[in-house]
Length: 135
Image (tube, rainbow, N blue to C red):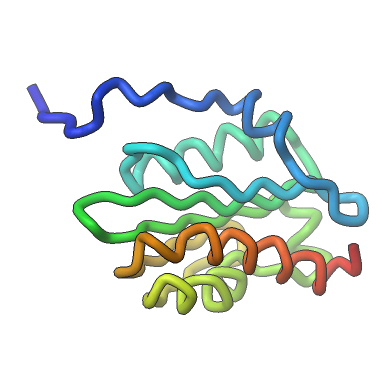
């Protein structure tokens, strides 16, 4: 069996995350640090959230594994049409945790090496969307 270092961290459900989303303009923005998730799990969760929301959703998730920060960002197609880009979003956020990354407009990933700065990175993520969408 694969070893899990996390002691049964309660998994946050997609519905929990949607319930905590911030409203920016007409969009919902989820910025959240996940406990003990893998980068793959972040990507899968973003897919589920986008399916559930359908439109007007921006998600940026962070997790810390082995002292490294993993970030993943996703957007629904309508927000991409409004000029948002997940890769650009992460380029703004990743430096806060001492990292970099990027990717496609709809889904992007980044890494960093300063777990203690994750809260600041999530704040930066929300600020960026507010600036872009004029919330």
